[in-house]
Image (tube, rainbow, N blue to C red; front, side, top):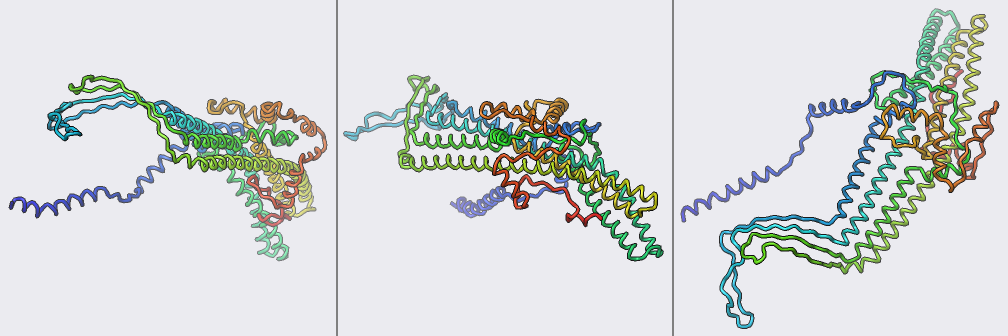
Length: 573
């Protein structure tokens, strides 16, 4: 008894110690990453950024830049991985359709013999002696096949939904490719303008700063009237400010292009001019209605909505199936080492039906919800379709306006260059001052830069129109191509813009009339400025009115070429 009391005195403290230790072991404290771990992660990421990227040892063309973006852009790699994951999930969901095949095995042992007796329900007297039908140690195993007919139907529909989600991932990858190619196109032409003009801008800024230093010395030595000297300096400073602002904008374009094609941001690279130079103007079909039909069929956002609509329709079928009773078929093979069993191996089967009668009450609500989902999917698709048509019309209007702006700026650049030539000759004959020469040179450089940026903007507007239609730049799958074959395919695609539209239009036949680009190409052969293409619909005319009033904003809005009166600087003298 004393022994038990001694244990009782110490049992409670020991128990508390054990419980406290277990509770402490289960406590999870936040553990931030160390600085060394973050540094190691950053070094690994920097090495992984450019892993697998082909080196650049030659000038990069626009087609190669696009091919590199498709092959090496990190955003596109992420979408390809998501697409592969969706494909794996689709294959996994297909396995859920199969019946369940379960194998079980077990071993049982007890310290005494199991047994039981029975009594009569009439007399209450024990009818048999205590007996046993099981050994103290035995093993059992079974192989069971279970198939629920209702689960089979539900799994089949869910597998179809997962297949549609895989197709949605493909359309999202298409959208990423379209966006990347458009960003590459825009950055390439701005970087091309930087490559062509930055050396000239640097030389001019150096000359302008020397002229500014000479003007300050002339003011200090009283070689000129003070007001005239200050006006001269002010004109030079305004010119230097405007050119420096444009120089800054151009310098960023190369970094943006390097990031898109996954090049080392610190490594130099050069761009190659297209074979046709910088004077070619992209051409598109003039039939806006055909472009609308192509956009409504090919835009990845609308295709995604088509699959989402099928998923919602399948969800409605799932709601109906869940109202039905479930039928469960079970069959299996069993074996046991219990020697008391008359048959130690046997096959058994069963059929079970289960029906939740509450589903009868839920049926009207479930059907109403399914119908509401279908209506929402339809409304969502219509809303997306209208947005697509709006983007198409806005892109078409802006392309037409950008083309006109480019032609005007092209003429302004030619006139500014001729003025600079006359001023240079006038300075040599002492009829023009040095300030006039510097100012006319600045205007000529500024107009030439505007022309280069206007052409880049024209290419950007063309790419936006191409993107708004949703036409793929290549007729074949992209992932199967290496860099060189992909570059060759893109080169051919860029040389013939109309081919992609023609393929898309042929795929719609005979639902729409044949697509023709010949009226536009014929207009281009005229020596004078081609006539304005009429807007096909009142909606397009209304959009043009909004655009001219400056009251319409769209995600397709891009940076406008700065004019003389922009906030980037005062007007050139």
